[in-house]
Amino acid sequence: MIVTDMRPLSMVEDEGFQKMIFAFNPNYALPSRTYFMKIMEKKYEDIKGKLKNMLKETDSIALTIDIWTSVAKEAYLGVTCHFLGEDWGMESHSLTTMPLEERHTATNIAEWIEDVIAKFNISPEKIKAVVHDNGANVVAAAKILAEKNGWASVRCAGHTLNLVVQGALKKNQAISKCVAAARCLVEHFKKSELACTKLKDKQQQMGTPSHMLVQDVSTRWNSTFHMLSRLLEQRWPVTAALSDPAVTPRGKHYLDLKPEQWDVIQELNQALEPFEGATVFLSGQEYVTLSALPQLVQSLKKSIQTPAFETAPVKSYQTDVTEQITARWQGLDVFQPESNHILLAAALDPRFRKLKFLSPDEVFKVQSTVQTLALAAKKEAKQKNASEIGSPITTQDKPLTSAKSLLEKILGSSDSSTSDEEDEEQQLSQNVQKEVLMYFGEHPLSKKENPLSWWKVNAARYPTLSKLAQSFLCIPATSTPSERLFSAAGNIASKRRASLSSEHVDMLTFLHCNHRLL
Image (cartoon, rainbow, N blue to C red; front, side, top):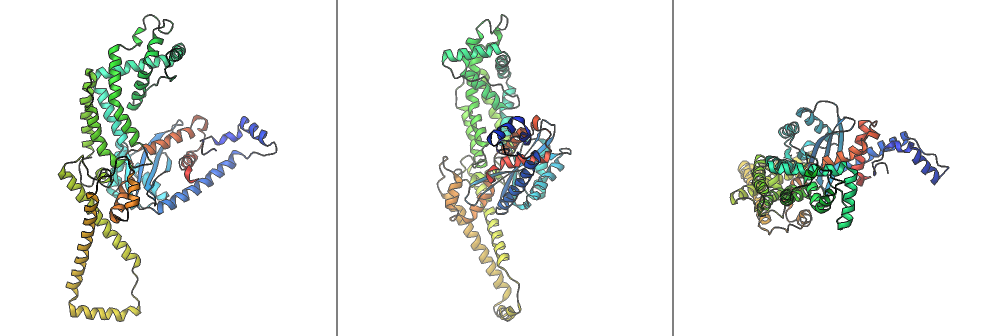
């Protein structure tokens, strides 16, 4: 219960809890907090062992990372891992909410991440990518890891979307003023008990849902979207409540929004809606997300241009946000085919394999890159198999070896050997080329279908490409999974539990987030 509901360990010493247990069984001696602490530590080691075994069985793993500070002013590094299981199901698990006691330099962050994978016995070559936000120190750390271990650096698409929308909103003064007025209006209802009560009365009279107004957070554009959406839903009850002299004293009628401001909010809400949908989709961790990003970026550009908005501020926003999208994703090289994990993930997703968002030349480059990677993977698998089945020469083998040597002298050893190797190499290349051409020649899967289910059924038809797909489709589009760790850690490291050691915060967060393994 403590792990699942994120309760403080000290609750076993609370008077009310002890009275409840006494009511259940007066003869039961409730164990101490120390007892439960030891159980938690044992469970942590058990689940950690289970997760190690799972990670041992997979060849491709992606990480997400983020840094957070608790109410006790302690910094933590959150790391999650993502991979595809034997049945092609998406697996997402917490690795650590690691306490940080030194400066958050790029070098330190890179070392801490390597410490985490060492703790779980993950060999560096298994890590395919690290997903992170746009913080300068984290970006630099990812670059260090990319140069040292070959891990792809993938910037969080959710964080980039936030920067895109925030940049466009701030650039437009008319929209900024309108949002500020809406924020001021919401604050008035939040701070005034009388205004809040009057709003509830008007909601009942008008048959409007009894929802509270939402206050936004300036750093999160989607919270501004939710604030405006709720304000539009409650427009008439809010206006009616404000018209009451008891709620709005003389001289404060400026709180109510003007008709033209309501028009801007109406259209701005419509313009922001596709970005909200994109953010929610990309933040998922139980399905494939990274491969959908290029198509989604193209769709966002189209969707923002489609509505014929009438207000000048929102028309200007359309232009600004389109420029922001182009600038942000071109800067991230999303449409540079060579060795790009986002495009390669899209190519290996049967829904997007036609790569319709690229030019024919770019499509050819991506397909060629896939073929090159597939051939390299095939050769590597062949060498691995050869080394596994190979055995040292014994004395019994010597007569056979001598006979082989004699035959080679007669037939010409070097030319024959080289020719055999070339034939084998050519056959390997042709097989891979055939597999790649057949895959890209198929009709794309419906957007509604699950690409992992498709690969589960078709892995035998495409043995080499299926291995590649496992490497790329496990990468999340956002670092939201590691941010979710801090939602749990925030509850665990609350003021009431601020006395918990950082190691125990890590253990409780690990157990809560990996509760399916319990």
